Structures are given as C-alpha cells and as structure tokens.
Image (cartoon, rainbow, N blue to C red; front, side, top):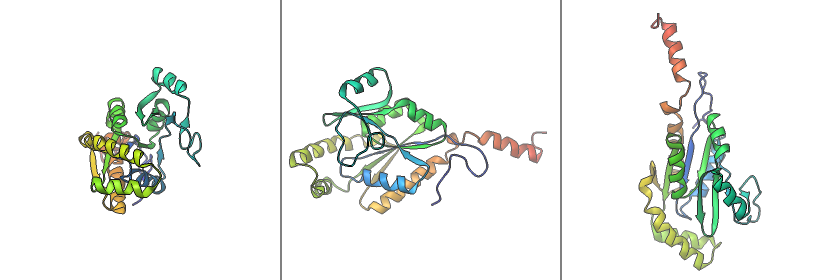
Length: 222
C-alpha cells in the first residue's frame, strides 16, 4: 500500500487525521502503533506530557515530556491539553498547540490513549478524529499475554484486568472496532482504515479549487 502525502499528485492539500488507537493493556495496541509508524512516513506519534518517571531507554521529548505533578496541574489549569487522563496514579496529557499546528499542515498524528482521552479529543476536535478500538480475542487470552510479558507483578496484572473490563465496555464510543486474534491481519485493517480516512472528501481541503479548474477547462463555467 503506497504511503499518502499531505499534498496529493494533483496539487491540492488535505487536512490531517487525528488517529486514535485504544485497547486494554496487552491487546496489541502498542505493537500495532509501532508497525504503523514504521510503515507510514506521513504519520507521527503525539508526544504526551506525563508525571510518571522515565522508564529505561525512554527519552524526554521523544517518548514523553516528563514533568512534575505541579507543572502538569499548571498546564491543565491553563487549558494547554487537548485531553488528559489519570491512569494508575500518573497523569498523561496531549498538548493542544502542537496538535492543531500539525493538523493544519496536513500531517497525521497517532494517539495511543484510553477511552477517556479519546472522548475528550473527539469533543474538542470532532471530525478530525478517527477512533479505533482493539479488542483481545478473549479476556483469558488477554490475561495470559499480560503474564507472559513478565513486566508486572500479579497485583498489577489483576488491576489491569479489572481496568480492561471497564475499557471494553466503552467500545461503542469508537468509529471502528477490531479483534486482534491475528496481529498482521489486525495491523493491515488498521492501515486500511487510515488510508480510507485520508481520502474522505471532508479532508480534501483543496478539492473545490481543483474541481473548478476542471470545469473551467471543460467550458462548463463559461
């Protein structure tokens, strides 16, 4: 599948897409997000602000903007976030100014956020937002995946499973819902959704001028 560009071969620009991926922890969202970023050069990840400590290998400004709780609260009070959420004793927020600038430039932005963040984002950005929810084949398989990752204690896994049930209950707040029982197939479906959304008429901001030029050349406007 060929990659899209903010400027198509016919010379008119399109508006960008705010592309949301959500899922319970362990359902494959992060893996699909990484594959999508690697396959789509016109897509970039939204870099969130967070109050949690950096994990080994994470780079400030690339993976997250790491800030203190006081700084995060100040930004929230100043309405600097498009959306923000409180997850497992930490806060995560999407910077408003950066996103709207990229969107107006025709750049697509990928969001790895939960249902609360997706809801807030949709309330503020409406038709620019495309929401995709990824389901596990079963809750038993989800729990098995979490245990095989061997990165969390059983207590944390139990908390993630409890949260997963709540997250799944909000599936109907999304535009697309996929079951990740085959990673490659699920990834290809996500990629097709992105390609189709890029081509929506509402995002082809320069198409009116293009059509007028077609009609003028054909004599229809004379």
